[in-house]
Every structure is written in structure tokens, then in C-alpha cells.
Amino acid sequence: MKLTTKARYGLRAMVELGRIYNKEALILREIAERQDIPLKYLEQLIVPLKIAGLVRNTRGTGKGYSLTRSPELITLREIITALEGPLIEVHCSNSSEPCVRRGECAMAEFWSEFQQSIDKYLGSKTLKELVDKQEQMFSEEKRDKKRARMKRKILIIEDDKMLVETMRMILESNHYQTLAAYDGKEGLRLVREFKPDLILLDVMMGTDTEGFHVAYALRRDPEFKNIPILMITAINQEKPYFNYDPKKDREYLPVDKLLDKPVSPDRLLSEVAKFFE
Amino acid sequence: MDDSMKSKFRELKSIEPEPDQTQGLSSFPEPFKEDWVSNPKPKDPKLSMILVCAHQIRSPLASIQTALNAIHQGYVPGVSGKAMEMIGSLEKKAEQLLNFVNDLLNFGRLKSIEIEKEKEILSMENILSPILEEFRERAEKRHLQFKVEIAKPLPLVFGHSDGLRHLFYNLLDNAFQYTPEGGEVKFFLGLDPTGKAICGEISDTGIGIPSECLPYIFDEFYRAPNVKKRGIEGSGLGLNIVQWVIQSHQGEIKVRSEEGKGSSFWFAFPLGKVMARKQEEEK
Image 1 (cartoon, rainbow over the protein chains, first blue to last red):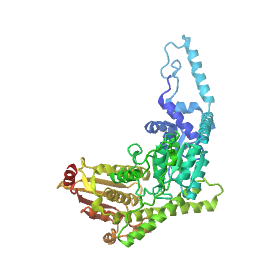
Image 2 (image 1 turned 135 degrees about the horizontal axis):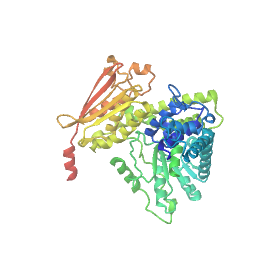
Image 3 (image 1 turned 120 degrees about the vertical axis):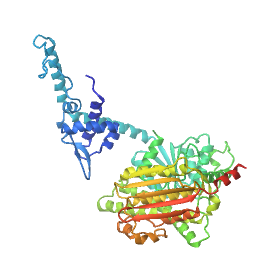
Image 4 (image 1 turned 90 degrees about the vertical axis):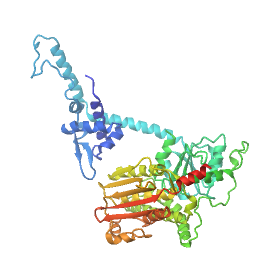
């Protein structure tokens, strides 16, 4: 009577497919990542779901798995039966091997009622209910994250005004608070005044090494030495080969991460988010 | 971080004022005019010109690209339809241009250094691991088979770290660039039979190089017509840098290719005066 991992993972995969029903198709790796299911497991359990006619796999552009019908029209009974077979096998009425005590057993009626009520319960629940619940939980999580971000102050020290403007738009679209300084001295003044939670720091400003000096100055100061610095620079021209390791090379350049310009919006947001995990 | 970078930073830190608790953040040093990050001044006026231009173009171009990225991905309100479509094409153009400028910078920078003075004792594993990591990721994204075979243990080499990185990077980059999805790239590195040289081969099942083009592929800015026809962007500097690195390590490089079937680059370069240098350093 214990539900197997197959049923638990399979139901999770179905919920994920329910969330994107009529919008897109997902390849197995995407489903696995989004619902945190081991890919190997998913590869196996997708087969019975396909055989049961609950999912289909399309090839070509927009390839991937999708539901064959709306989540409202899929019951949990169908899904669980596809994955596990019948949940409870009642032997009393099993036609191929009828119970020898049939007819004189007080348990027969009870078992059969038990089976029917579980069937009825699972049959009355649709996938849509689970999908809606999941969406609601995700959106609450998102709102909590947004609230947390709204309190984060990020200082951008960068002399290229267009780049500052771009980064502010990207960060503010994700509800961070931003401040900007166009040179090192102004940057340090804003650090003192606002004590930001993170500093995005350019290198070449008034001088070729201005950003480095800002980093050194911050690290010397007992009050501000722990504010994380994300250095974004154009000097690191040679692919990933500056080979900066924030753990080993701190004594030379005391920053927490070094990114090469140009930084795409997605990359900027994901790198910034890492500082607030 | 490389030793050469470390010593640059050590120098930089040495001009910093002594820690002064009372001053706190105000102890920011006065700006000074020192050419720290920019490139060595090449004697060759052509290289000098290339470097100055590329340098001046790169930084604003990088911000243009980030801005276009941001618009295209919807971070800037009020852009849609045809304008958005055009922004998408501009974004691609900016990326191509940036790649070209990066190639120019690498080309100018490498060619203007005094390479013999910058050679050091190197471990091939250290040089290769970030590069191979990057290409493994690319292989997965592009659905290419990427087979790596490195004889172990490889001896230390007396060479130029940045140069050797470009050697491996450019050859792999080409192999990946010109091999369609589903193809295969192989990378082999080992010791030659004499035990005194590193030899390697990078081969692919890509579009190949027409035989009449083979004599020119190492020339500056040369690009084979079959590549141009396919609209694959590139500066035509990659292999020129590769050849320069090989030559400045007293090595040799050979190419074999068949159009439509694939290409293979074989190279070898001596370990250099590793032992001699090691003993010298120990003294």
C-alpha cells in the first residue's frame, strides 16, 4: 500500500506538464530540472504515462512532451493507475484466482468498499487541482522573494552612463533598489552614506586601475570590508583566462566575483541573486 | 590567477596608502596616470594602430551590446513589433563586431609582446582545464560529440601561457564552429616518441577546407569561401595566432582536410628548456 517513488515522481512530472499545457512542450531534462526529479527515473516513468495516452512526445521545432488533454480532464486515478497499476488489489473477487473462502468471509465486503472509495476519491480529483495549488505556492514563493529583493540595495560604480542606466533597469525590473556613482570617489561616498548590500564595480574609470583601488579602500575599512563586490570589467579580454579565483587570489584583488563585459541581463541577475541566497 | 598577474597586483597594492583606521574610506589614493592594464607598446606601427583602435572600440561596444540585450529581452518598456525585431538583429551584429574586436586585441597583444621574456614553466593540465570545461559545455549545447584524450602524466613545459591558451582555444573554437550538429570533435594531446616534445591533434567531422584554400588558411584575415558562403562569422585571425604561437615555441603545425568530411590539425612543440630553467630557479 505504500506509494512508490515512481508514483510520486510521475505525479510531479504530470503537474509540471499541466502548468505548461497549451503553451509549450518540455524535453525530459527540463521537466527533471523544474521538478527536481532524477533524469534517469523520469526516462523510465514517462513510458507508462505515454502508453496510457496521458502524454505525447512531439518532434521537430517545439519538440518535447506535453499532455494529450487538458488537466481538467485527467483524474489522479488515471495517472496513478498508469504508474502503479491498481492501487489495491482485492483478492476476494479476483476472477482468475477466486478466493477459496469466498461466500463465507466477513472481510470481502469491507475490502471491496475500501477499494471503491479510494477509486472514487482519486477519480474525483483532477490534475488541474494540483496544478492550481502548485501555481499558487510558486507565486507565493515569488512574492516572498520579491519582498526580500526590495530591501536589497545595490550600488553600481561605473563611468559609462548608458551601461549604468541599462543595469539599473535590469535590476529594478527585479525589484532591487539601485544607486549609481560614476567614479570611485563618489562610489566610496555613497558606500558610507547608504551602506549597500552589494557593489557592482567597474575597473577602468578615471584611471586604468580605479576600480582596484576602490576595492582595496573598501577592504581596509572595518565597517565596509564585508560588503560583497562583483567586479565587472572590460580588461579581462582573453576569454575566461584572467583565471581569477576569489578564494585563492583575494590578497591580490579583494573582490568576490569577476565578470567580463559584456554581461547579459540574465547573467547579471543570476550572479547578483547568488549574493543573496 | 597567473603569476604575471599576481606580480602586477602586488605592484599595484604597494602604492596604496598604509591602512589608517581613522581615515577609513577617505584614504582613497589620488588618481595616477599609469598605463597598467593596457597593452605593451608595440614597435610595429601597424600593431600599435590595431591595438589602440580595438581598445577604444571594445568598451563602448560592450555597453551597446548589454543595452541591446536588455531591450531585446524586454527590460525596457515600450519597444515592440518591428522595432524589437530590428533590435534583435542589431544585437547579433554587435556580438559579431565584439568578437572581431576581441580577436584583433588578442592578435595585436600577443604579437607585440617579447615572448621569450614571458615564458615560464607551465603545467598543460592547468592551462587546459578551464578551456576543456568551456568546450564540454558547448558540445552539450550544440549536440556534438567531444572526445578528449590526454596522455598522463604530461611533463611540464617551458612556454608562454597566454599563447598556448590561444593555440588550444582557437583550434577547438574552429573545430566547434565549423562542425554541424551531431558531428564529432576529437582532441588528443601527448608526448611525441622522443619524449622531448608535446604533440597534439584536433580533428572534426565538419565542413572541411577546400584543397585550393589550404595554403592560405594561416594568413592574416584569410577566410575560406565555403565558410563565408555559409555566413559563419569570424575574423580570419585565429589560425594566424595559432601559427604564431607554434612558431614562437619552435614547433610545427600541419593540416589535413577534405571538403565536406572534416579537418584535422596536428601540431608539436618542444618542451623547451624546462629542466635547465628549473635548476636555475632552484639555485
